[in-house]
Image 1 (cartoon, rainbow over the protein chains, first blue to last red):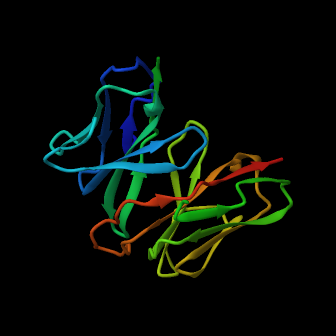
Image 2 (cartoon, one colour):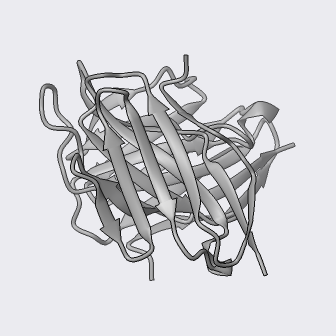
Length: 112
Length: 119
């Protein structure tokens, strides 16, 4: 089983649509969680951290379910500029300390 | 302007060449990382340095040799690479110090990457 698993997509949606990405992780000792965004041929950039109570940043809402080891990202009213690959990232605790584990990414394409 | 700068942006080299990738961070962070990103695969952590000390080597072949002279600079020396080493190499930095038993590190800031092609 992969340590962090995402649906690779691509998700093709029209402008204005609501889209949800799911992510599961295998290490129950994971302590912090993030969503990164990566544009084509660019570096990953932090989109938002994910908190246990769930958190929202404008059109973006992140949820965490520790019991199910599941993280989600909801994008409302999608814009063309939201087209990118969204990376689920889990910071797991190992003997050597914390380590960021990246999912494969989910590709989103927003069309006019 | 990105807080993490990588050079060169693109590199094409033969299997017998020796080259180095450079990373510089301007954020005052104390940990730096090398990642490899191949097509259709997740980011793979290669090396972690904390205050110039290597704290993790993720079973990376010896043809990749990292060097961290200070907390702001990180190099990846390359020699006798293989075609399967062609990938995007990303440098990142973070504020926290990754140490055993400690709370995991904060989010990382990435450089633009070096796109490496091995002929």
